Each structure stands twice: as C-alpha cells, then as structure tokens.
Image (cartoon, rainbow, N blue to C red; front, side, top):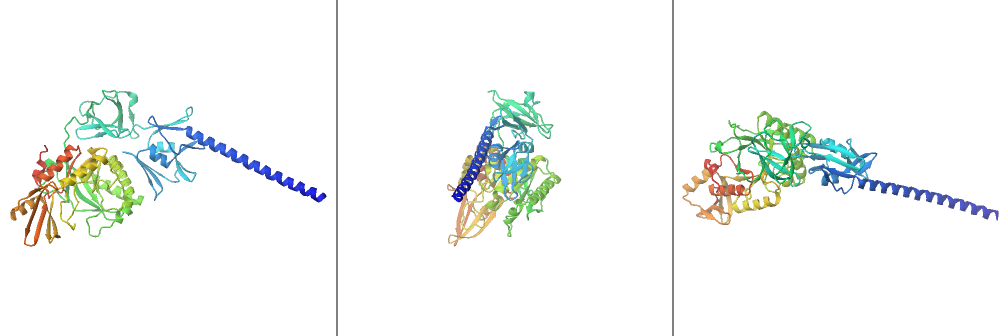
Length: 528
C-alpha cells in the first residue's frame, strides 16, 4: 500500500513538471509570436518616401536595433532604377547617370536577416548623396534626391526631361542668363558642379531641371521639343586613317579603330592616324578582336568577372582618351557569350559614369537591337550605333543583300517597340557592296567592293543595274558561261533611303561604315 502511494506521488510530481514545462514553452511561443507580430506590424507601418512618392515594398522595412534595413529585391523594384547584383563578388551595384555605389556583402551597413543580406536605408542614401530623414511622429522615412539627369546639353539646345516618364518635354533656348525661379527649388550636388532648377511650363506643370555650372548659361524658355529643325548627326567609321574620299566638312564625328582588348585586362593599340581637325569629334573604337582568326570568346568573360581587370581596363581607357585629347570611346564588343551579357551591360554603365565624370562621351555599337537590354543601356550612354547591315557576310553560303531597304525597315519597327528615346539611336549604314559568284546555284566566291570599285566594275563589264522590289535596292545579275554574278548595290539611292528613314523616324543620326568605302557626294545627299 505504501509503495503504491509513493508511486502515485512520483507520477503526480512528474506530471506537474511536464505541465510546468509545457506552460513555459507555450508562454515563450506566445510571447515570441506577439513580438514577431508586433515587429511585422511596426515594419508595415514604416513608409518609405522617395522624392515625395510613397514606395510599395514587398518585404517591408526591417527595424533591427534602431536601424532600418531593406532587402535587395525591394531596392531593385522600388528604390533605384538601375540596380545590379554581382553574384560572383556578391556585390550590390547601384548606378545612376553620374554616380555609382558598390556595397559588398559584409560591408558596414549590411546584415544577415532571415538568411538574406539586407541593406541599411540610411547607408544607401549616404552612398548616393541623398538627404535621409526619419520622422518619429509619422514613422516614415524620407529620401530626397533632386540630382537626377533631367537636362541634356546638346550643340544647339538643352532638352528638359520628365523624370517620371523619362522623356523629353521641351527645350530651353541658348540665349540669355538663366532665371532661378524660386530659391528653394535650387540645389547643389556634392561636387558643387551642377545647379538644379525648377522649370514651370505655361500649363503650370513643374519639372526639375539640371544645368551645368560655369559652362554656359541658358534661359528657361520652354518650347515644343520638335518645333525646331533636327539635323542628323553624321559619323564616319574609320579603320585606321581618314581616306581622301571623306569630306570632313560634311561630318560631325569620326570613330577610329584604335584599341583592341586582347586579354582580360590588356588593351593593344592599333595603328591609327588622327586627322588635323578642330570641328570634328573623334572617338576611339575599342573591340574585342572578333574579326581575328584566333578570336577568343573568353576575353570578355575574364574581363567582366574580375573587379581588378575591369578597373585596369577602365583606367587604361580613360588615360588613352585624355592623353590623345579625344572626345570619347565607342564600345564595339561582339560575339561575346550570352552568359556574360548582364555583367557586360553593368560594366558599360560603370564606364559611362567614369567617362561622364571626365566630360567624355561613350557610344556603344549593337549588331542587333537585342544585343543588349537597350532600354537600360540607352539611359547611360550618349549614343547607340545600331547596325543596319550584316545579314550576310562574304563567308555566307547563300547570295543576297547584306543591308536591304526592307530589312532596315524591320529594324525601324524594332526601334519603335524597344527604344524609349530615339535621339539616342544612330543608324549605322554600309557603303560597300558584295559581289557574289555562283556556279550551279552554289556560291564559290564573295568579295566586298567599295562604291568607287562598284562603279568601275559596272563600266568594265557593261552592266546596268535594275531595281529589285524584294530588297528595295538596285540589283545586278548576269551570267558568263556557267558562272553567275550577283550584286545588291549600296549606292546613293540605297544610302539616301536609309538616311531618310533615320531622319523621319527622328533618330539622332547616321554612321557611315566605313571611310575609304564611300564617295564625297553621299554626304551631300538631300533628304526630301
């Protein structure tokens, strides 16, 4: 009997212990749940306001020991327009028109939260020179930035941009002194190089415009952006030196092949001759050796996957441009791996920031409209040279036009769908034709002919071209014995049509490829 009573007491004591532990666990879980719920609710109550616009944050603001953090995805989707995360170096890169911030995982201002790296909102603002304010009463975070790229300086006018739509809304004429409308609307950037001015239209619509200080002064007189006559910018691509057939009085710029990327961090200088001219802008073309027989696709891979290599190439580029007193560079990278595309696009943005800080321009050649994310790239670079040729080359197995009018029209349709600002696009057109030699319907030879060489060839062989409706070009086809010769002509008619497309589609201009292949009179083509 005694043993039974003692046994029951032990059992009851054990049960009581279990009950106490269970109650304690439930209490901890409830407390933790309430605290987590409170944390989540308090985080949801925090509103992030950038330039008077409240942002929707999927993951919300995380408050850890009084510091407000934000996730990478929310930064990318809402906080800044151009954000790139380099998975290789685990670095968040934020790029604007003239600023760049790199924040590496583990840097001050980053912390691990729920197995993800989060970034201090205050640190982000400070990195980019923004004003950061926490309002304790409303529990809101305010970030102010009026140093966006709203005004673009051109030769004859200043274009005023709508920041929300990223589009031109008017122009300010280059006349008298600029009028600062309201003191509170004027801000200075961190380097004190720019003034940001509040511009009001006749409809009382207000825009924030930026004008470079100490360069030239403007009157904030807003007009219709398309009311003035637009002239095409004409660029001539030169392999090494200007040919005798190039009329420098008819062109605005020369793109000269001067540099080749031969390894991940080495730029090799090509043979070139700089013309003695003051009125023509000169750009150094840099390529990745895609024309060479031993072309290596890993050159771009090794470049963009190494911060050290990128810095070496960037420093070499800017030093070369400054030493030769050039106006900028043309990036002509082709046949790179698709897997390198995102990293290469980001590097181009970083180069753009570097060039603009040194008052130099950056142009990018694109073989097709999907070579890069054009809507992203065009924001940073000064111009995009979009090739309207290359459908066929001398190594093609089938004869045909390499730059037909019909194919150029297709490119124009793609521009319509994929380009925000057409004034960033320069249409690159060829001046050479290809003579195809066939036997039994099979191509046995193909050679490039300059415009002058084409004229001489037609005279020697007593051949007259005829219009070909399929290509929209003049066309030659004749047979000698069992050999057939074909040529789709790049002549004044073909070039003039493409120039007309660029003009009426309101593109920035045309680039003629290449010097030595054109006649002087093509620069005098009148677009009707």
